[in-house]
Image (cartoon, rainbow, N blue to C red; front, side):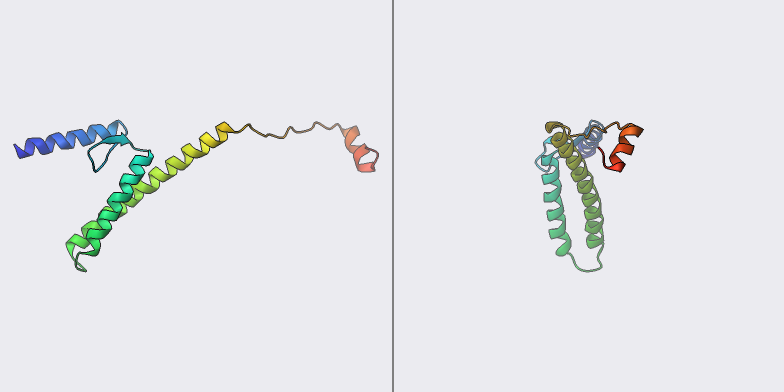
Length: 118
Protein backbone atom coordinates (compact mmCIF):
# COMPACT_ATOMS: atom_id res chain seq x y z
CA UNK A 1 0.00 0.00 0.00
CA UNK A 2 2.80 2.41 0.96
CA UNK A 3 4.67 1.78 -2.29
CA UNK A 4 1.58 2.50 -4.39
CA UNK A 5 1.12 5.86 -2.67
CA UNK A 6 4.80 6.64 -3.13
CA UNK A 7 4.61 5.74 -6.81
CA UNK A 8 1.53 7.96 -7.22
CA UNK A 9 3.41 10.84 -5.61
CA UNK A 10 6.33 10.36 -7.98
CA UNK A 11 4.00 10.28 -10.96
CA UNK A 12 2.33 13.50 -9.78
CA UNK A 13 5.71 15.20 -9.45
CA UNK A 14 6.80 14.04 -12.90
CA UNK A 15 3.58 15.33 -14.47
CA UNK A 16 3.91 18.64 -12.64
CA UNK A 17 7.48 19.07 -13.88
CA UNK A 18 6.38 18.39 -17.45
CA UNK A 19 3.61 20.99 -17.27
CA UNK A 20 5.86 23.65 -15.75
CA UNK A 21 4.45 23.49 -12.24
CA UNK A 22 6.18 23.68 -8.87
CA UNK A 23 4.91 21.82 -5.82
CA UNK A 24 4.95 24.15 -2.81
CA UNK A 25 5.43 22.98 0.76
CA UNK A 26 1.73 23.57 1.41
CA UNK A 27 0.77 21.13 -1.37
CA UNK A 28 -0.30 23.67 -4.02
CA UNK A 29 0.99 23.57 -7.57
CA UNK A 30 2.09 26.96 -8.92
CA UNK A 31 3.89 28.15 -12.01
CA UNK A 32 7.63 27.44 -11.94
CA UNK A 33 8.50 31.07 -12.62
CA UNK A 34 6.26 32.93 -10.20
CA UNK A 35 6.75 34.93 -7.01
CA UNK A 36 5.04 32.14 -5.06
CA UNK A 37 7.60 29.64 -6.33
CA UNK A 38 10.42 32.03 -5.45
CA UNK A 39 9.08 32.51 -1.91
CA UNK A 40 8.67 28.75 -1.49
CA UNK A 41 12.27 28.16 -2.56
CA UNK A 42 13.43 30.78 -0.03
CA UNK A 43 11.51 28.93 2.71
CA UNK A 44 12.98 25.58 1.66
CA UNK A 45 16.51 27.01 1.68
CA UNK A 46 15.98 28.53 5.12
CA UNK A 47 14.67 25.19 6.40
CA UNK A 48 17.58 23.22 4.90
CA UNK A 49 20.10 25.67 6.39
CA UNK A 50 18.52 25.21 9.81
CA UNK A 51 18.80 21.42 9.65
CA UNK A 52 22.31 21.51 8.16
CA UNK A 53 23.57 23.85 10.88
CA UNK A 54 22.24 21.53 13.58
CA UNK A 55 23.97 18.46 12.15
CA UNK A 56 27.39 17.46 13.43
CA UNK A 57 30.40 18.36 11.32
CA UNK A 58 31.56 15.77 8.77
CA UNK A 59 28.39 13.70 8.88
CA UNK A 60 26.40 12.27 6.02
CA UNK A 61 23.40 14.41 7.08
CA UNK A 62 25.43 17.59 6.70
CA UNK A 63 26.70 16.46 3.30
CA UNK A 64 23.14 15.64 2.26
CA UNK A 65 21.84 19.10 3.22
CA UNK A 66 24.74 20.80 1.46
CA UNK A 67 23.73 18.96 -1.72
CA UNK A 68 20.08 19.91 -1.24
CA UNK A 69 21.08 23.55 -0.71
CA UNK A 70 23.16 23.55 -3.88
CA UNK A 71 20.20 22.33 -5.94
CA UNK A 72 17.72 24.70 -4.29
CA UNK A 73 19.97 27.71 -4.81
CA UNK A 74 20.48 26.78 -8.46
CA UNK A 75 16.72 26.55 -8.94
CA UNK A 76 16.23 29.88 -7.13
CA UNK A 77 18.76 31.62 -9.40
CA UNK A 78 16.95 30.23 -12.44
CA UNK A 79 13.56 31.44 -11.16
CA UNK A 80 14.93 34.90 -10.28
CA UNK A 81 16.57 35.19 -13.71
CA UNK A 82 13.29 34.38 -15.46
CA UNK A 83 11.32 36.77 -13.22
CA UNK A 84 13.80 39.56 -13.98
CA UNK A 85 13.45 38.91 -17.72
CA UNK A 86 9.67 38.95 -17.35
CA UNK A 87 9.73 42.22 -15.36
CA UNK A 88 12.09 43.89 -17.81
CA UNK A 89 9.96 42.92 -20.77
CA UNK A 90 6.83 44.26 -19.04
CA UNK A 91 8.57 47.54 -18.23
CA UNK A 92 9.87 47.97 -21.76
CA UNK A 93 6.45 47.20 -23.23
CA UNK A 94 4.82 49.84 -21.05
CA UNK A 95 7.10 52.70 -22.10
CA UNK A 96 7.11 54.18 -25.57
CA UNK A 97 10.23 53.41 -27.50
CA UNK A 98 12.53 56.34 -27.88
CA UNK A 99 14.55 55.51 -30.88
CA UNK A 100 16.66 58.13 -32.48
CA UNK A 101 16.03 58.49 -36.10
CA UNK A 102 19.24 58.66 -37.98
CA UNK A 103 19.39 61.80 -40.00
CA UNK A 104 20.19 61.27 -43.59
CA UNK A 105 22.82 63.81 -44.51
CA UNK A 106 23.98 64.20 -48.03
CA UNK A 107 27.62 64.75 -48.93
CA UNK A 108 26.92 68.39 -49.81
CA UNK A 109 25.32 69.02 -46.39
CA UNK A 110 28.28 67.35 -44.66
CA UNK A 111 30.76 69.56 -46.55
CA UNK A 112 28.76 72.67 -45.71
CA UNK A 113 28.60 71.64 -42.05
CA UNK A 114 32.36 71.05 -41.89
CA UNK A 115 33.03 74.42 -43.47
CA UNK A 116 30.79 76.08 -40.88
CA UNK A 117 28.20 77.32 -43.35
CA UNK A 118 25.45 74.96 -42.12
